[in-house]
Image (tube, rainbow, N blue to C red; front, side, top):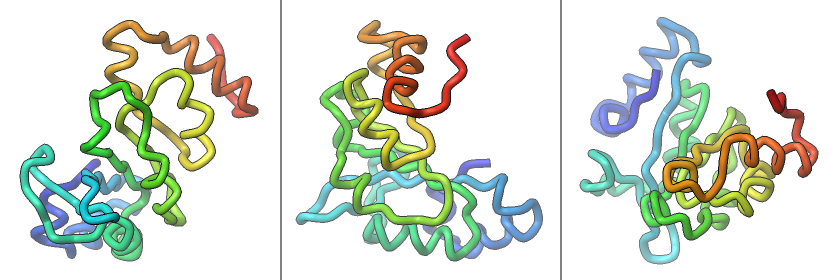
Length: 148
């Protein structure tokens, strides 16, 4: 189960879901937009500011019971211009971290250094790379990957 917008209006929802079903089922999705040298969390498909600083919000979500964080860079999403590595380096959580936003084939190994997963959308959709190529790149970087 993934939540984003509802977790901002009712943060205790994270704990309620985690308590009922276990933290392993709960992904807290965070839409991050670069603002004044940091990142602000947004909701509603990146259309509405929350006033929450992203790094602190990610840590708070984990403290409340999130079992995984999905961070999307609004600034890079769909651009195929590369990930926001500064954002990735800033997020420190003790649960799996998945990143989305701007990933190209040449970025896969670098993103894998900071995450346990990644969402590669536009580069696949527009034919810049294939899933097989992504797996091969991950394997070259030392990650254990099933190639078939």
